[in-house]
Length: 195
Image (cartoon, rainbow, N blue to C red; front, side, top):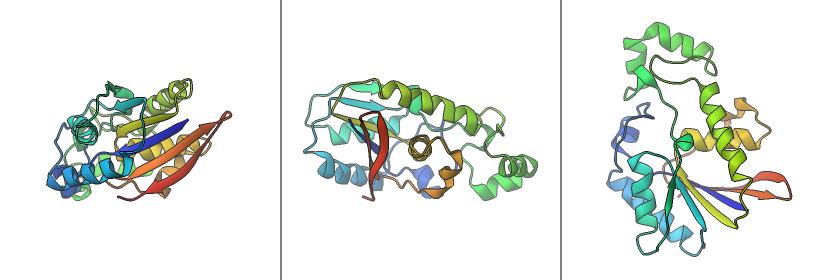
């Protein structure tokens, strides 16, 4: 099974370099162009299933890619970006000014610390793992997952023997496409393409 991972295109929040997972924001013009680039790269692949998160930015990405094809998008909240709670919509610098103590706790225990109103990375990982375990039960040839940077980097951790420390060893830029392969009970990263 070929599992294609596509990060949504750029939004205004990406441009501002804020932390945002729960904020529901649309693609900007650059993001729409990134969707067109992804469409050109993926147009020859026959996808039997397309999963998207609950966020409008992944829906918009998928709609551009499949504007001339009939395919159902399967929404799954497990592939939503991590919720940052009180940190939502703020840059790293802004968080440091508004919540210096919370920021320090977050830095010192990034896996377990939970910002008020948000979720910890450990909880976030569990829902991504649940999604991936279910995905491996499918009998499909090509699947597309339109999701978020944190989700994609966490899927890499899942593939790499669930070593969460690898989260910081990968980038995932807007519009990037990755291919994960699941064959004969083995799952591995095949390629990562920067669009």
